[in-house]
Image (tube, rainbow, N blue to C red):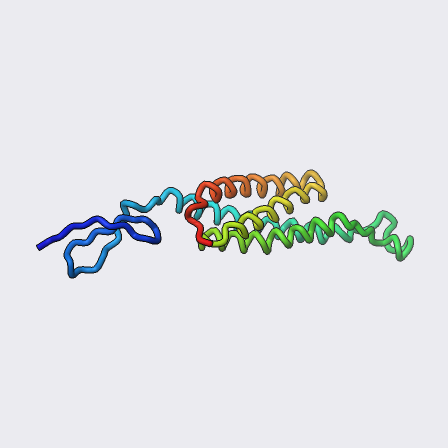
Length: 166
């Protein structure tokens, strides 16, 4: 004899069907919202791509920090390298964007720790904004795509805040 009773999962809210009294409970895919999980997967991918671009900002910032001076080697030992601290700070922000961006991307895929995800996205935004110090070229090539990808992933993540667990 078949007894059909509709129950709901306590964790995810999907519909559960119980076919017989002795059979185990089977989850159905009707109650799951695949659109929100696809948004989070896309947000995680965009954040990881933006973190990889932040590594390029870090390399460019640190390499441009010690650029060769106009006089060359024979003019003076102290004027051979011009030290640019603002470009070094941009490189450091690029490294922070890389580290926190990868952590944020992994946490988006795991759907955990929403507050740390937002901190990682903020670090990516900061690295993209600081790339303007390197010049207009690196900002257009590296900073602008990071800003666009971070904005899209922030929107996707904030839409799906209910999917995150603490």
